Image (cartoon, rainbow, N blue to C red; front, top):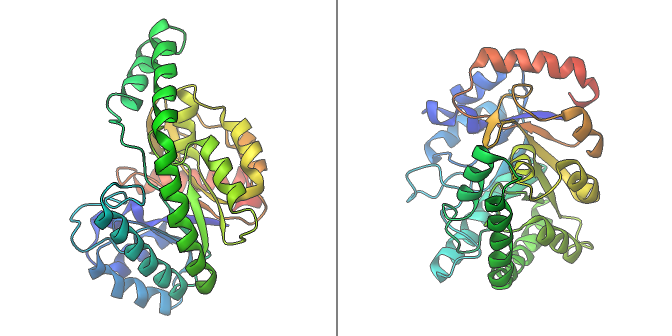
Length: 308
């Protein structure tokens, strides 16, 4: 099932129905309601939904945004935080989002699980700069990558445990609401979980049908570009847990959320790992123009008619 995320045009609209209408004009009828949404747009979104204008493929936490957060900040509150208030607020907002997702008959809720307290400018950003300038063959790259992995592995267990405990609580409510929890792959190695942690997480919930994996094509490609994983091999390994994915392209080495077919991703090699009919949601930068999205959609439907 092909769908489109409101992250593309959310910031340009004050009225939720007008936001939905603009996406419909691109040629999409399935829509993912994404984070960064003000509560003021909710009545218009509900009006469009009740009029049968669109179907809601899923929702991205937090929806709508916490009223006290004035910018689009899906990680404003983390389940892994040292601050009890932040952990509590994260749970409160997630449960409210789950309830709304059920009202829109969403199939899934995309979740960010938190992070470990490492300054990404010192780690992911620095490693990216090395790769951008000199590739992955130099001594600086090897030393930086090894130090990065060792540091994170050392401090991660506490934050992984907090993420698991939060997910156990959310999963009970997800079953009540009939909405699957889709734990998303993240773009920074400091984020929770890494791919190795994701495998452990999915094994932990292997008997819980309401927890699975959400593959973000761009996020995983960024890690691929840094030499932290192999994109195709990772998909092969995690595919039994797949719920769906965010589709966007990447221009080397780190410009993600680009329109499909404008970057380096080889979708023909990656899509076979996705089960038939699962949600594939275009999640594009607000800077991308309507015309290039429409053109890419034509190409997509021609190349992947069974994924449209």
